[in-house]
Image (cartoon, rainbow, N blue to C red; front, side, top):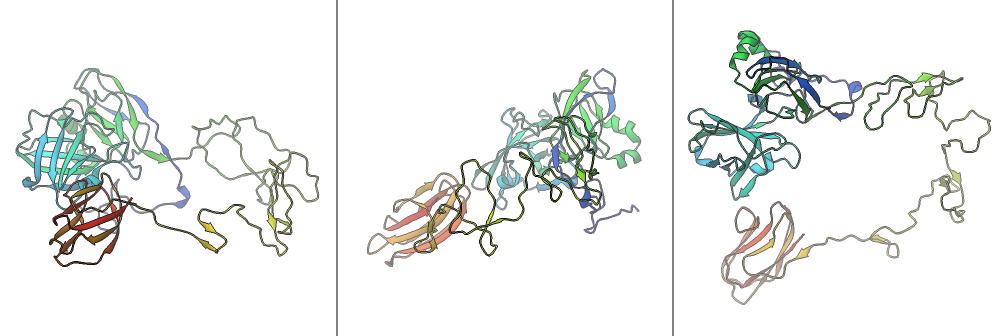
Amino acid sequence: MTNYVTRQGGKPISNQLPLQVHSVGSSSDRTTVSGEAITFLSAAAASSTGINALDKSPILNLAGTKIGSYWGEDQNKVMEFTNTDAFGTLTETATAAAVVITDRVNALDKLFEAASGNKRYILKATDSGGFVLYGWIGDITVSGVAYTIPIHNAVTGGAQSWKGTLADFTNTAVKRIEIFSYQGSVVFGTGTVLTEEVGFDEEKIQSNGGLKTFFDTLTDGQYGINYRTSSIVFKKATTGTSDTVSYTTFTGGGSTLTDDTAFTPGSSDVTAVGFLADETATDSVDEGDIGVARITLDRKQITASEYAEDTVFASASYLTLTGQEIDDPTALAAMTEGDVGNMKGDLSGRQIVTLGTLSAGEDLTNDVLKTEQRFSYTASMSADTQVKASGGFLHALTFTCGDAAPTAGTIIVYDNTAESGTIVFDHEFSTTPFMPFTIILDVTMGTGIYIGFTTTADVNVTPSWR
């Protein structure tokens, strides 16, 4: 029987789900992780195996929020499709790789698209023979409830092509489609020596014959990453001896520099670590150096604007204003362009604050601030009309009767650019004449605004939108 130490929610503790213990004192700004060049520690020939330790440890995931992991692990699976009726065409063609999935419940484009930068999710397709194709999800095209998902061969985008062996895969016999959250962050510069990441579980490897057994399972170009120890275990695809590694993630900032040494703006990090007690004979530093701030012997921080009581203020010295100048608010002295002035207080000590000019919409005469909603409108319509060809905001619909006996029918508003897709508003009219009325919707339209009619040109609609 295997025993696991678990978190409060029952999940076993792991590199990706550690105990929830954090020190506020150790927090720091996130900084971009710098890349590195590696020389493969193996023989020069193709199919050679080896292990390389990387400089960055541990290696975080794409978002920089936790220790990374191989994308194909079960913990990274976010969605699975096994109903083959939902699978449309799977295109294997290089530069046009894609798969069509029908989903009446989930908006797959909103779930899995990346607005910009690196891709966040991987789609894995398995056929009836157990063969696999996979790749990173690109910008999804939506047609009703059918989603065309383009597939790329790299987290950075790369070509629109599948990873895997196309010759083995049967695209007309797709059995299962899974979507995984990409939790890696290592990108190779050439990607020709090491080409495909596989799972690396150090505990299973230790209990199943060690690294020799793991090496035996690798095919040329495959590699596993121990994200905790920052090591790569690999079998080379070519005779290449080196490559570059970049990290599409972040790390905690804050390194230290020796006092009175050169500081490079924009690249050197600095960590504040207390102050130097120094009241007399202060040592100077050179232009561009970093230095330790000073405190008095009773731990008060010394700044350039502080002077001992009853000492002369030298011209061009630093100045920090404290308090405020008391002045009559009805007779304030004029200032000259470029001067420094004191904060002013009235005769009761209250700070004087004035804008000097009116704010937008301010009406001092009537003591009000004017606000209003502004929308565009489309002239009264009585037949199918595309109101807006992109996302927007639908404020209201105003209905009027076109003649004395309207035709019974329905008016439907779609969040789309055509008469299909998500229905936002659906109203059925009878043949009874009616007085004009307005429906307030105030809804965000993600794709477009389209109004469809089944009446015959005798019920009019005027939409207000932006």
